[in-house]
Length: 173
Image (cartoon, one colour):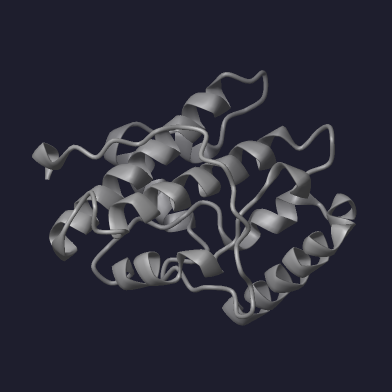
């Protein structure tokens, strides 16, 4: 099942890179990456080592109008991947415990921002956003399609400008 989803995602992303992304349903594009999994010691190496091999969603991958949910979800993935890079590059956090703490904070901050954006629309919010506290994080974790943060073979993520600043607070670890 994971390989089928991964292969499908690779084909979609390759198609997008050739300029044909306007014909692909953006909701389908996100099936293999949203919601992102909660960082753990089990997936931390993949988070830090294979970030450039996981999907990104530049504005050009969406039609000019519509698909607001997919845009918000894609932005959350882009934001989180940029923040993971901050945590993993060694300038902010050092050692697996600190990097994991930073990555967890980035994950919660990115999904919290996603939920804030979800509630600012006139549509129904993502079901996990309806949850509070730890129940929200458990919901996102349960729905994550790629808990091991597998990269997409042959895919190199485009550079997507960071839209928000993330500041890690080591005192909460």
